[in-house]
View 1: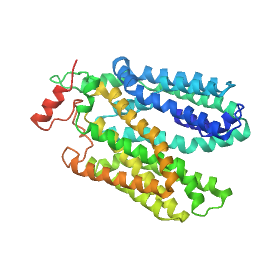
View 2: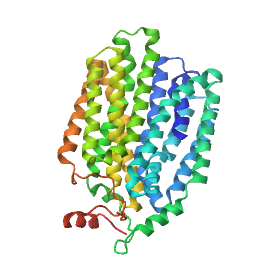
View 3: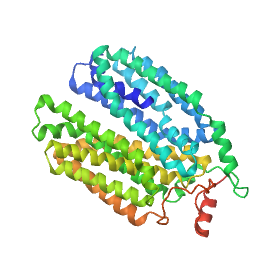
Length: 413
């Protein structure tokens, strides 16, 4: 509900700011860019902090805190009268955000260990479908009512999400299940924030998540321009671009959803490397062809690859993190994702000023390099990574004495 509500209005923020008395197009772009960028920037800095607090005091209350703040702040957006009011509210949103990483951590802990990839994939499917459906609904609402009332509807969406979390998520039951599952010789221990990155493959997964988010968000600034460049009539550019973005969002959701099944049959490094290679192939098709049907196919291929690789990366990281550190760990991963989200449009815009096709070929190179690195360097055996049903430990995997010693060194009271 939160992701859908957010995308009801944010794609139309330039129109909203221009309605606040800003007539110069350049100033509208500046206010919009800064207002859109400040929230993910602050969220990237603070997501690990909120995650750590969630580990200590409970993730449910942290998610409720975040969503309650969005109920208030989105409603306040309906009453702003100056562009700096929008920027100020977006800044506060960045401070209190963080429900995204916490919701992934909650999914990881609420499911049995053998079902963790499916649980993470389900949450990420919802996160992907929200942005895919939100702008369509928001556009219709903007036509029926106005953007100010659309912000109130967005606030209502967050309120529904808040109520659902409060009533339906039983954190005590989840916590009790993890305590019962732990072996007596492995008492539950907290992992220090500074040592999270020492877990097996964690830094590699951070890099992969950054790269996937970078590629995913690079299309926004250039795809509509590229659609016009290849010969689509100007009055049809918006609808064609919207269809391509929707295809990518929907197939990305499919990639998230089916990733768990793939991981039940193939090693995680194969799933991640295969997803990266598939995304690279889609980027190649986008840059090499100007035919709409080929671009549609390429968008679908990109979405599937990015979705599958993203969920597999989060699952691989989650499988080696003790339950007591999921919040902080997924917060760190979310920070890597948000850095990719914030930097990609800027770099893509600079590349697009030289050549629109260059953006797709840079994405191709990035996906190819990451696929090779994952295939060659990812640690672990070649068995499927879905934990066995009889594996009840919540500590990091320790297949040999060296790995056990590393896990002990990176845990602390």
